[in-house]
Length: 326
Picture 1 (cartoon, rainbow, N blue to C red):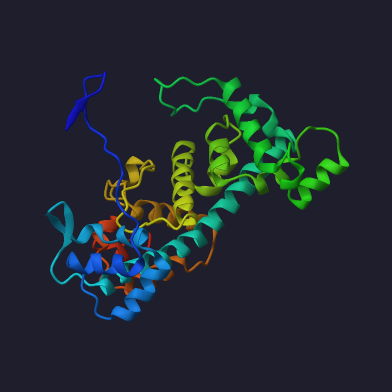
Picture 2 (cartoon, rainbow, N blue to C red; picture 1 turned 30 degrees about the vertical axis):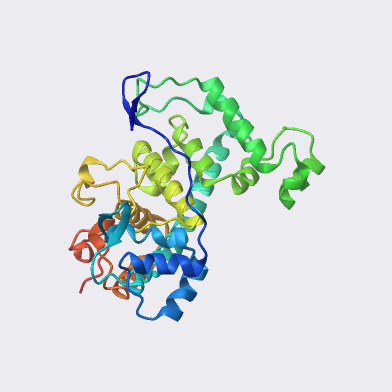
C-alpha cells in the first residue's frame, strides 16, 4: 500500500517485522533452496558459522537473479565458494587499506599539529581565530564560527576524557595531574588521542595561512586535501567496523581536481577513487613504499573478482600512479 507524506511524496506503508530467527543449518538450507550451490557443505557450514548469515548475505546481492514468490533467487552456477572468495578478498583489502590509512593519518596529525604550533604555540587549537569558513564551503550553508569551535572543543574534551579521568591515556593523565592551566593539553598530546574524523574537520576549517605547510607536505591544495582526508577517514571507519568495500557505493565522495579527472575516470563513488587518492598521498609522505605492489598481489590472487564493480579501469596497472605493469 502506498501512502502520502505531508510533503506530497509517495511513501510505502510500514508493516510489522515478523521474520523468524533461523538457526545456522536452517539459514544454509534456505540459501540452498534459493539456488546457492555448496560444493563442500562441511567447509561452507564452518565458514558461515564464523562469518554470520547477515554479513555474508551482503556479498550475495550481485548474484541475485530476481524474485520468486517474494524471495531472491541466485544466478545458476552461483556457489558458496565463489561468494566466499569475494569475502576473503574484501577482508584482505580492508587490512591493506588500514595500513595506508595509518601512514596518512599519522602524517596528517603531525603535520597539522606541528606546523601551527611552531607559529602560535602548543594550545593554538583552543583559539577560534585560527579557524574560519573555508573558501570552498557551500555558500548556501550557514557557518557559525563560534558555535563550530565550541562544538569542536567540546568533542575534543569528550575524546580525551577531560571530564572523565578514567578514560584518559597515561600522558593525558600526566598533564592533568601536573598542570592546572591551560585547560586542555598541548596539541601534540591532544592530537594523538582524537579521531581521524576530528583531525580532518580541524584541517578543513583552518584559516590561511595556517594550512599552507600541510598542503605543501602533501602536494595538494586545501580544498582537495580536506576532501581526501574526509573520504579516507570515512573509509577507515568502514574498515574498522569490518564493512564491505567491494562493490560498495561510497556515501562520502572525494573531490576530483579537474587536472586529475582522467586519472580517476571521472568517478568518485567507488573504492578505487579512495585507493588512488591514498596512493597519490603515500608517494608524497612514504618514500620507497610497496603499498601499490601489495594491492596488485591481493588482486592477482583473486582473479575472479570483477574489478569494474569497484571502479577500477581495465588498464589501472599500466597507469603512472601505480606502475605495476612491466
